[in-house]
Every structure is written in C-alpha cells, then in structure tokens.
Image (tube, rainbow, N blue to C red; front, side, top):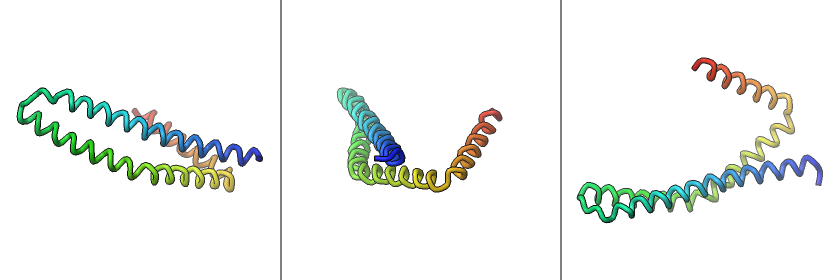
Length: 113
C-alpha cells in the first residue's frame, strides 16, 4: 500500500471514529436524561408529571431518529472526507490558500473581541 493510500485510509478512520464518538456521546446523554426523568417519578405534581411525560415522548422520538439517521450520517462523513482528500490531492496549493484564508478570518474575528 502506498503512502497516499495509507493516509487516505487513516483519514476515513478518523472521520468515522469522530462520528462514532459523537453518536456515543449523544446516546450517553439520552441515557442520563432518561435517568433524570425517571428519578422525578416520585413527584406527583401535575405540571411535573406532564413535563415528564412530554420529555419521555421527546426522548423516545430522539432515540428513533438517531437509530434511523446513524447510517446516513456515517456515510455522509465518509463522503465528505473522500471529497476533501481528493480536492487536497488534486489542488494542494488551492487547499493551502483556503486554509490560510480561513485562518486569517478566524484570527480577525478573535482579535475583534
């Protein structure tokens, strides 16, 4: 395997692992929110009960959305990484110019604060 092919494979692995990390973090957040909601089950106040019911519905909907979106999100990240890698290899000087321009803009925004 050539160096170009090795770096290309590593970049896709990094993008996929970042996506997996994000999905894992979101799942952990949902688990924590669910535990927090269930911990309030002993409170019988009508408004708290209504909020708890709505939150559980929203959580169930978010879980379903995450499970159906996880595959397409991973594929989009891989496609984005491939496109970026191809652009940089075909146009290295343009990529350097874009990166320098973005760095300059970020520097200007930071210095204005």
